[in-house]
Amino acid sequence: MLKILIADDHAVVRKGLKQILLEEYPSAEIGEVEDAESLITAVIGKPWDIVICDMNMPGRSGLDALTQIKQTAPDLPVLIMSMYPEDQYALRVLKAGASGYLGKNTIHDDIIKAVQTLQLGRKFITPAVAEKLADAFGGNSEKAAHEFLSDREFDVFKLLADGNSVSDIASRLSLSSTTVSTYRSRILEKMNLKSNSELTRYAIEHHLI
Image 1 (cartoon, rainbow, N blue to C red):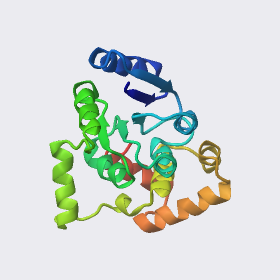
Image 2: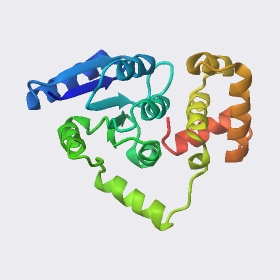
Image 3: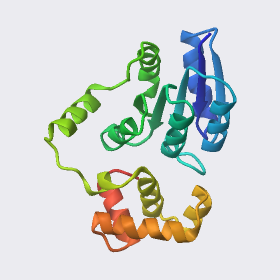
Image 4: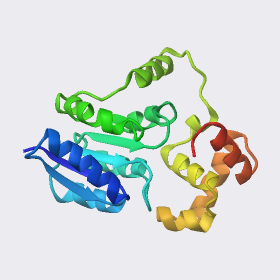
């Protein structure tokens, strides 16, 4: 029996995906969690065949959860879904160990195809992502400044750009304020920016928030 775990903080999203999956796989076991901590606990608690995880959830991000999942269950296929464009996020999540990236604007059309692809032991990659991968490995594209950030720095960058304070980010990511401030300094230096407002402007211009 196919076992699929869905992680998303919106109940309506989980319900919609569950309905689509059960129409294709009537006997499947579909689990639901609403945040990254619950996701990690569920993965540790029992075996799953596939995880479908939102990139942006309360607390730790889906990208952060993905890193821990790959340490706990390295062979477990994880599909990351997000409202953000695949050309901005797909490469990062694939490099972090995801088995595919689904944009929420097309997820209802792609989810079954993605699950079928993962069942065959392959990664789900759209034509647009395949082209991006070819450019990246062929050296045909210059990296944007945010692509030089580590996954943790990228999480902090997005939260800063979205207007969160250092203390808010520390609480959300279970870090100390000093650590977050250190990340902020590194981010500004790597991106050659001077302030949070410049981070916000950059994120908006690159469709990252």
